[in-house]
Image 1 (cartoon, rainbow, N blue to C red):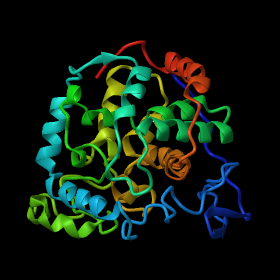
Image 2: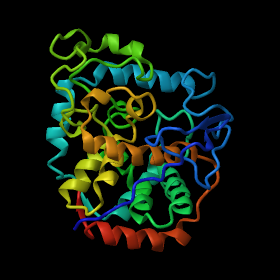
Image 3: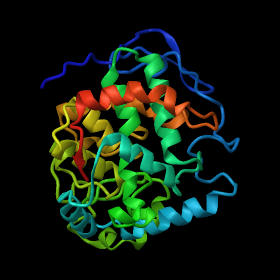
Image 4: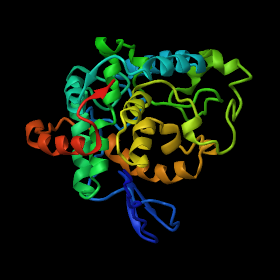
Amino acid sequence: MTILIEQPEFVIGVEVEIEAGERKVLNDEKELVLDAGFVVPHANSFGQTFRDYDAEGERQPSVENFYQINHINQTYDFVQRMRNEYSKLNRVEMSIWECCELLNEVVDESDPDLDEPQIEHLLQTAEAIRKDYPNEDWLHLTGLIHDLGKVLLLPSFGELPQWAVVGDTFPVGCAFDQSNVHHKYFAENPDYYNPTYNTKYGVYSEGCGLENVMMSWGHDDYMYLVATENKSTLPSAALFIIRYHSFYALHKAGAYKHLMNEEDVENLKWLRVFNKYDLYSKSKIRVDVEKVKPYYISLIEKYFPSKLRW
């Protein structure tokens, strides 16, 4: 099944708000207008700037400690072992919605912006996208399922530690870019000193394509494996979003572009659209689950089999 999707619209020579407090005139047709009807809030649910990893607050010490452990342990060899193990998809058989409900038990320790159960974040993201892109049902469903891989934290999925499931992702097998959050802790990672892995390209080559790059292991890559191995009919842009939505060094800082191919460049446009809703829709405002459930069940039935291997 092939699904054709329109590219996000370009607006040239028009002043638009890109993020709260920042305005920009778009003169390059390659620049995207990321704002539609959704209004970017000025602060997160704790009253602080979004993704401010240095702001003092009750979650700052635990978030920094998370990234220290993450950066020390996410090595090329570790990622290979995790991908080999979890690509077997032999843990559980269940539907997408059943997995959504499991996330009621999960709180992301790496997130400085929210401490609500993850199903709240999924529905907030999906509903915000739905309002601005009513005709892109694949994007609504992507908002709902993008974090489902966080079930790796649960006992039936191996109960992996938070550092191996959540947080920003980054390539392993090449040099760690300075734009990665709390970059200083990579100095304690064994790959940092390995000449095979610590150069700009490492084990990769110019334009090799992100599908050929090993990313730090976590919920993103796991959910990508679940979707592809269970023959989801979501378009490539959706699968790209699922796999790289935590790859902030790329879609926020522009790092690692030397590894991208032409398909990556096209899909990145949609990831940047998605990212605004993923990041800024987080709030304490609850979504009426029972009210929206029938709509999302219909999308799940359209793009996925009734039961999936996890």
